[in-house]
Length: 63
Length: 63
DNA sequence: GCAATATGACAAATACACTTTACATCGAGA
DNA sequence: TCTCGATGTAAAGTGTATTTGTCATATTGC
Image (cartoon, rainbow over all chains, first blue to last red; front, side):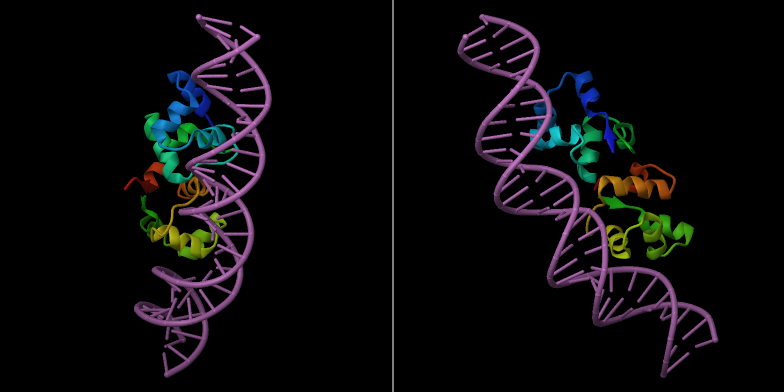
């Protein structure tokens, strides 16, 4: 899975910590997901979509 | 997370095993997800959406 | 009644998601 | 230069997703 987190974050000028706070996860989790070290759980993916007010399919892409 | 797997499966008259085969996971995984014992990983959620030719948001619902 | 199929569930094992703590690097600004 | 915020990564620990194997039950066809 690839993802557009870095871009979406940049569009809002949020740091990884800002996003982590909104998602209620650690900054390291955001970093790991963003750099592709692992994929989020489905509930976290939904939360990410909520925070960016879009669809999961618009953020995460089959690779 | 709630999900509409049972209904989608019924619409196609697929057994849990049929779906498991298409998803390339065990029947126990399909059963556990369907009965809400756990949520699928994000890659598996994408595969499920593919198999049913729809969106993740159309199958899995925030609860 | 019997075999076969479908479903639900549990246990043990492995893999992965996520946390906390910690350290290193880089760029911007005083 | 010194500091500070932002980022990348690593180790160790906890929890969850998924597997294989197994059992119980219900339903259907012969």
